[in-house]
Image 1 (cartoon, one colour):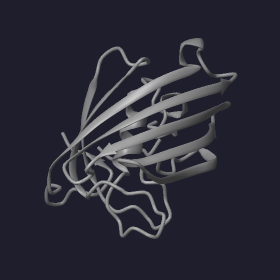
Image 2 (tube, helix red, strand yellow; image 1 turned 45 degrees about the horizontal axis):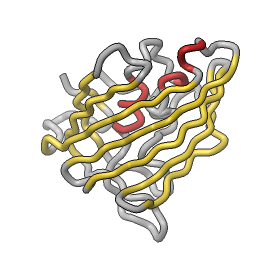
Image 3 (cartoon, rainbow, N blue to C red; image 1 turned 60 degrees about the horizontal axis):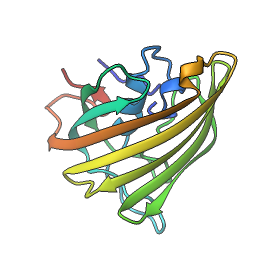
Length: 174
């Protein structure tokens, strides 16, 4: 199954749950994190996780239970936010990642389907074998359910190895 880069966010993007085209809310953070990967670091560029097969355990106050997703992660284009990839149907007026003590920080302001989602996240870990993402999102607009106006999402990721042969980046692996 091919990821529809659609959160987290995320995304948010979200990363994010409220900004996702997936009405279950579980796929967006995984999609945003799935785009996180290693690329040559430019001066001041945010660090990114190493490419390969990653397992993401996604939990949050808008999810009934943690969700586990295994995804093949590829390369992030230079200058892109590896923690919040562009998504079809989503327009981001801000989408930046930067180095931060112990990892990276990111901020995005994205609009989709009558919603605006502002997301701020912190990434920690070694980014070669395991990392954690913590995201706080605020959603507004006519299509936002009251329970999703403010959400927190956590993604705990661990690298499982190389992607299976023939599996494209940003693809969920069953």
